[in-house]
Image (cartoon, rainbow, N blue to C red):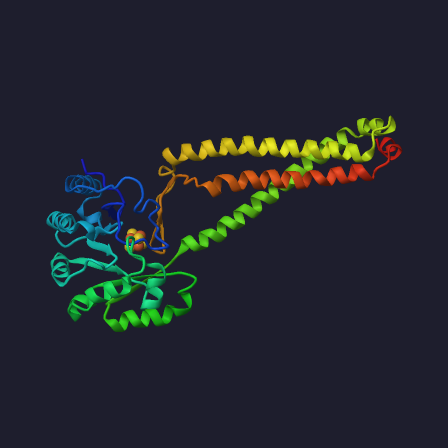
Length: 346
Ligand code: SF4
């Protein structure tokens, strides 16, 4: 029986969650935090063998090694690349992503000798690079100077076979053309441009929040007006037997405050518990969709939450405050009405 071959092309191997840099736009959410995690050679070889068993050597078009910083354990990286080459000969492209701070002519020679493509993350000239790329333990030192010091030791041929990977942010976008020219003139054979979509994600979050809070205002206003209209007769009678409109209005205001306060707190607690649950147990959509790679950033088909103090407290405060503001509208209406008008209305 013919072997079932899956149409999967690339394999990304992430060697650890540790990096000697701490870039401001780092896509790695657990970079240099929590427990240090490092793959072993046995784990890499096992994963690779399993993968090859699924896709067949001919189906593999690219194997990427990324970080956080794969050169932190260079012997492991070299041994893994050798292993993959021994199993796949020339076929798949092997791509190694590095921040360039551990490069040396010997290492580049060894890796390029195994037909591995080295991709160096560098955002262009010093001004652009050092704006976002900083050392984890020494933020004052220049990452650009460190990388350039290493790159200048390489031969022209070695550099020509390497690729520069630029991440463009809102601040460095105006210098994009100058930065690409700088890297090409320096000698990189290829320059990749990646947009920092995490910045755009901030705008998306803002738009989602606006839509969400607008919906909250509509629902709260509708609920409070309905509750007011349904009890107009009672309010009219209360006014007719002597309860002043001002006190009636205060009563409605207090009711609105309590409703929005309690619903904000209860809803917030449920949301916080849900967030912590989804932090540990993601929603797996891999049966319905594959990972999406855009601008060198990969969105996994697993939804996970990353609760922060701000993301938990802001919605609770906003819903409570918005509910209170909305409660003032029916209260103001009630304050203006005379009992006789109220009774005539119903
Ligand atoms: S070099 Fe890469 S992994 Fe390391 S901090 Fe920067 S973006 Fe993150």
